[in-house]
Length: 244
Image (cartoon, rainbow, N blue to C red; front, side, top):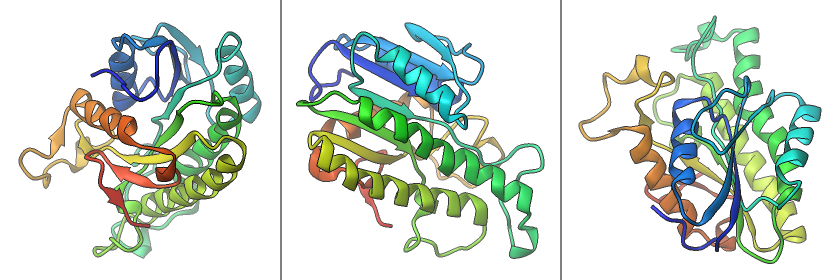
């Protein structure tokens, strides 16, 4: 697909480019003729498919600042994607009951899913181009919706994504005062066939387990259709607003 609402010669950054969804964003955007440069940013700087790759720790504010300065040396940013997140890993698993809440695991989930995107936003939002549509989009999750929570469980992950939605909303208000053409939005990608979702795919309905390429195409369509009045909102891959 081609981004239609951003103009041309776009300078784009993808944080979390080493992951399944982040890598799919990099590949899709690198093929877009309206894009001049894609910066693929990951912890080790080895993410493939981007026109330029950068190593950056998303929890190191100084490293983020230096990376943003490098990628905007020749042009401001027009679109940035934050595609980082954690659901399970070493000592981390979605809690089935309050009995499973552990300090270290919950801290790590909040660090990656909430604090890191907030730090990235701190440095990216001032670097967005002025006087034209620009966007920062962070991967949210429908399970982060408080009003939509009917099942319980997954305390840390739900809390981290709910907190991210508040970060997006709060920073979007400040952004509107300084750059009224810019947006900060959240995106729920659906269930994507990546390592993050792999242990939890058994109950996914037919047709609702997406490839990274399919999910990214839908999310880019959603980004493209948004206007400044949508800033501060979390949207599903199909463009439907997700309630807080």
